[in-house]
Image (cartoon, rainbow, N blue to C red; front, side):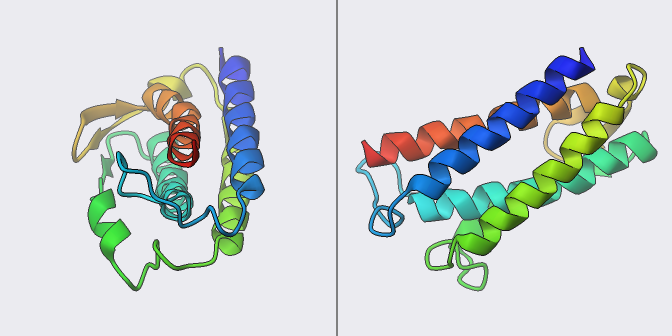
Length: 152
């Protein structure tokens, strides 16, 4: 089971990076009528989400019972200091790549027992390592689809 999670996690990482890195400079700021976010904003969001996920996974593994704090992605996206609308994407993509590589290594070391470790998420309630894996395999793919939708 863990091997399958790890491989799915790795594949979703590669798919997101391949697509994000292929977006032209002129398309990074394109908006669609149905989505207020641009591909640039999506890339910044996914990277910030991954940096949060990095710590969440480690806390769930090392400190079962921990509190997992959510955040308001819409507020983050509108914050000019975080520069979702104007920031370069090279650094966020490098961070995404590094964080995902580190978490992938950790996932490969998980035991079946580790999958049952739970904490309490401030938005979702009980939150286990297995739920983290499901969410963070899907998250980049969901946003990959979002970017494709914006650009098509």
